[in-house]
Length: 394
Picture 1: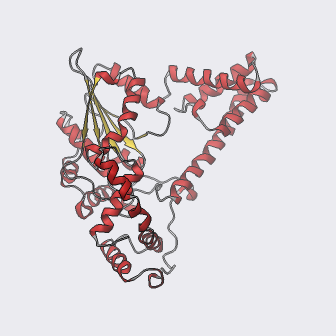
Picture 2: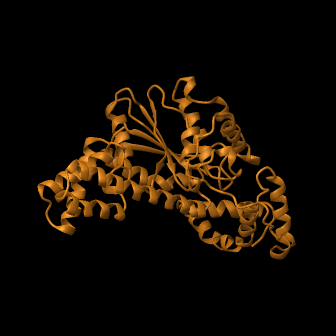
C-alpha cells in the first residue's frame, strides 16, 4: 500500500525546500526528477524526506547533476538504485547496533533465549487480527516518524465501520494504546494506555499519545484517558511484549470481536502472569507450533551465537555468593543457557549489578512522586528486584 497523497506531497515540498536552501532554486527538470524519485519511494511506503542525511546527499547530488545529463526516467531509476543501496547499508548497520545491545534478532521466538524481548516481527505474529469494527495496526516505534501511523488512524476515524483502534507501541518496553471513538456526537474519545508493569508506567507514553492524536485532529480535551495494567504485573525485564499481546487479545474479546480474531488460551495465560516464565513459555510453545518466520537470506543479518566451546571461568571472576546465583540461574534456564554467550552475559550482569543498585534511590524518589519511569529506569528496577529476590546484594 502506498502512502497517502498528502504525506507524499509534504515529502516532496520538504525535499524541494531543503534543496533550495543548500543549492539554490530548482529548475523545471530538477524539480521533475525530485518529484519522480519521491513518487517511486512513496509507492513502497517510504517517506523520502524523513530519511538520513546520507540519503538526502545522494538525492541532491543527482538532482544537481543527472537531471541535466540524461533522460529523467533513466536518472530517477539510477537514483532509486543508489538510495536503495544506502538504505540497505543503514538497515544492516542498525541491525548490528541492536544486536550488540542484545535487542535485535530475526529468529522466531522459540529459537531464541528464553528471556529475549519480543521484536517487531514477534508482535506482528502474536497480536490479534483486525475484526469487524476493530482495527489492529502494525507495531509502532514511538521514536520514529509517525506519518504512516497518523494516516492509518485518520483512515480509521473516517471509516464509519471502525469503532476501535489497537496499537502496540515500542521499542525497549512495549505498551498498548487503545483508542475508541465516541458512539454519540459530543461524547469523549476513550483512550486506554496499558503498561505491563502497571498504570503508573503507562503515564510515560501519555505525551506521545496526546501528540499523536492532536496531529490526527483530536485535542486532548476531547479524550478520556485511562491508565491500566495487567491483573498480575510484569516483574521481569523481558516479557513486556507478551503482556501487551495478551491484553490486546483480552480487549478484543471484551469489545465483541469475532472469536476467530482472538485466542482464549492467550488470554488465560496473560491473566495468570509470567511467574516462573509461564507466559513466555506459552508463547514459545505457540511459536514452535506455527510455521516459523523466515529469516533474511543474508547470514549477516542473523543473530549468531559465539561457539559454545569457549570456556567461561566463573572460578576466577565470581565470589561464592555470585557463583551460587550464577549456578542457580544456569540450572533454572538449562534449556537455553548452555551457550558460552549466555554465560558470559550473565557473568557480566552479575558483576555490574553495583551500578544498577546505585540508581535505585533516584528511581524510588520518582516513584514516590508518582513520576513515570523511563524505559531504562524501569528495566533497572526490575533487574534489581530480581537480584534481591535471590538474595544478591550490591
